[in-house]
Structure formats: structure tokens, C-alpha cells
Image (cartoon, rainbow, N blue to C red; front, side):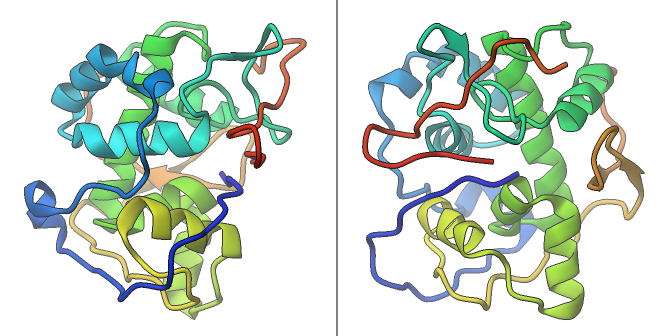
Length: 221
């Protein structure tokens, strides 16, 4: 997954926090708008269910969809097909929906937030903080490749981490914090994989359209 984030802050010192220190990790730097705050009750529910800080969920939603479910009367969907408030690709959505017993509509706000938070949890269990944000944005396969080969991450991913995790938009991004199992399953319709760890049991809509992240810059996948 990818999103075009414009970086205005100066480069910061890289921050790597062990995955066991989730409660001590800093909050993202993105300002949360009222459009995202309106989903706070569901964000709180998802936070409790998947043990992911509300601040992380809200920040990802802010970066991905700005809290909007529709644009010009159509469900918010990126050119690449990422859907809903948390901008999930179809394969990721289907995997999370099946594993966590969610409904059939990827644009349902509650189910989309739950699926996105479950995916954040899977990325955190595999990569720790702040690597989960890189994996959420670029895909776990691409981030794992970076960790193996040090092939630079896309600039938009580095900017994404810089805004969500107080990390620098440089080619040297934080290493993985491997704390979960090393088992993976393929996402349908994609070349990405995500961690397969014990979890509770869990198509792209027609006429969907891409929406700008805000009125001055575009969000894309």
C-alpha cells in the first residue's frame, strides 16, 4: 500500500523502540482532524480488541483517508484499489475479514477500521515499532525485502513513517523488531504476504473513486 505524504518537517533522528514497549511508544505527529475524530468510538473499540494504541489507528486513518468514507458521492478508493477509511487492498481486506468475522462490505466504517487495525497488529507483531507503519504503507513483502537487502524504501514510504512515527525521511529506516511467529500466508490477488499468527476468527466496489488526502495534496495507493 502506498500514500503520497508531503513532508514539511526537518529530518529527525531515527527512532527504534522494541516491540515489547508498545505502551511507551510516542504518539504520531499528524494532527487529527474532526473528520477522523468522528470515528473515535470505533477506533476505541478496535484499539481494545487488537491492543493497538488509538493514536496509531487515528494517525493511519488521517494519512490514508483523512476520515472520509466518500468523495463526490462515491466510496473512497485509491487508483490501485485500496478501500475505505483505512485504505485496505482487496486481498488484505479479504484476509482480515475472514480471520476476524467481519461483514462483506469493505466500505462499512466499523468493519474497515477493525480490519485495518487487525492488519496494523499483524504488522506490529512482525516488525515492531515503527516498522509496522512502513509495512502498512509499502507492504510487508517490500519492507521485508528492505530489511534483507537494504534496498531503499520508496520516498513516499519514508515520508509516511516520518509523519506517523517521528522517524526520518531517509533511506536508512528502522530495522524489524521480530516478536511474533515467522509464518506467512499469501494475500489473494497480491504479491504481498502477512504474518499468520493465532487470531480470533474473523471486491472492489463499482463506481468507486480516488479521493485527495486534503484539498492541496493527493493521496494515492
